[in-house]
Length: 210
Image (cartoon, rainbow, N blue to C red; front, side):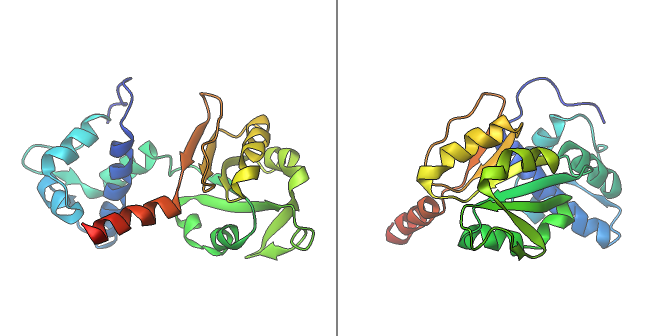
């Protein structure tokens, strides 16, 4: 496999790569040795042309007429998506949403290790959820650095979220998943992904009406 070209890869392509990986992992467990782009398209509800375009960003994977070797495609997709490395995660805000994250056991399957949480509630500080310790938020910078956290998940109220981002960035964090319903500012080299749960539900109510 060749390395990806230097042009920016569309985020939609990255999302679909995760979808392809989930499907070929299933095929690999079933000991299915090869799959065509057409068959993979049927499994993912996408066109075979779309699949070929997405994969072509990263080089040549399959052979015309014989499709993709499933074990090789699994290995290549895992490498592209950073799944061969282990990444430590911290949750900032141990309320209902943050606690739900801490109780979710699926992260480890993707080499994502949620190992720390932070809160400003004295009743929560020092406690553990799913064996994950909750630290005082005033300790966020040194703990993030000590634990070598790669990704911060922010579930604090909107009015506190920018201060949390500032502290996380100061600690060297480059990837942030934000659930606070507010636009956040961060340096250009920091990736902030915003998840607006209420906004997504409001979009669904539009489709209920129309």
